[in-house]
Length: 210
Image 1 (cartoon, rainbow, N blue to C red):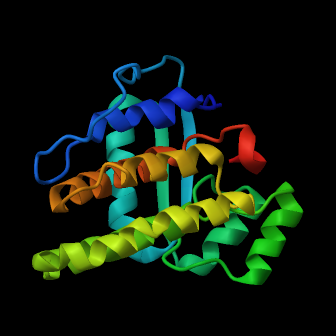
Image 2: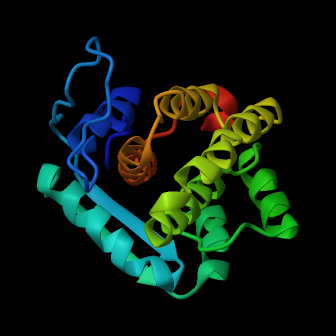
Image 3: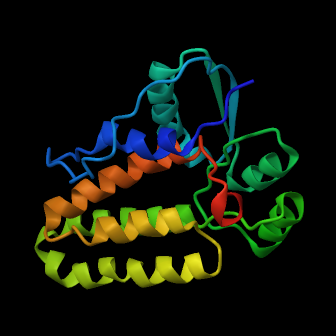
């Protein structure tokens, strides 16, 4: 059986990828220690869901296996609609989706686990959208920045409805506070991508099981 990861595994591992494609580092609290590999992690980890995310899931799996080669990661891409049933039936631990869950999928998930699925993916999609906009029109950063900062209000609302954890809210708010220019945003986008990779391997006890 693969051991459950504690908070340090997911959050501190972000230190492994704090450099964006620009080579600029995100400022990290010096009190946070670098992630340390733990022993005894083995077993199977199954991902069932979106076929358009297969490449990204493969990259995440390869990075994870460099640390934990005794974990067999299996990736099955048959469409986003296959992710919720796989998570509900327990045939997968990861359910990548390229769209938001439908109300019926959310209801079925909540009936099975007693809490709503997280909206973290929704915020990641927004960050990716802003990143694409900036890469297409770098000179528009000053006009786009206010919309990026609006993620603060959105994550606060989601946290208030218990759709994301308070730790995730703090992660987003703390990161947005540091964005002053394009390079800062690109660094944040790279950090968020790393977060998404490690998030799937950890479930904190607060915030409805997230």
